[in-house]
Amino acid sequence: MLRHRLGEKVFFWSVVETIKWTPMFILFFGGISFHLSAALLCHFFSIKMEWTATAKEVEKQGFRVGLDKIFRDFKWMYMFCIPVIGGMIYLGTTAPRGWTITDFAAVVPLANQIGCHALLPFALGLV
Image (cartoon, rainbow, N blue to C red; front, side):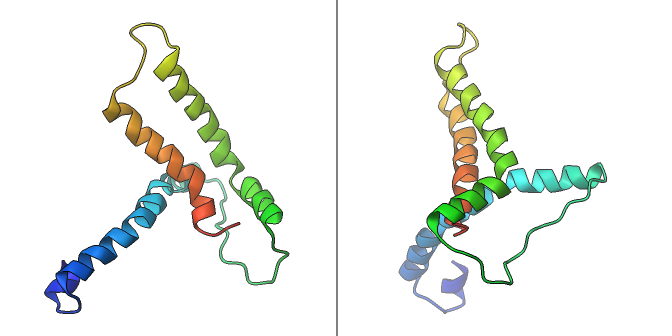
């Protein structure tokens, strides 16, 4: 709407551009919460933490090398996500009566967060 009001684009093309970028925004902002929480907790408990920035040197490339790098760099995130996925499956299917969680409003947000966290390294092109 802002680009339309500024006269940069026709309203229809502004909407099309917004629709085009929406999946990437959902994936990025949905998958960043674990990393921000880890950074805040490290700061709170005075744990030294370093962010890995963009690579400044040429490295060996390839799909297998990229997968190894993703699982090495994001191992703590995946080790957190796997039990959460298992808990979601348990509470949705085999939990005792009264403990099952099958409500759409409870399952979909957590599933979205887990899915975004799992796909974020691949979507950002870290492979």
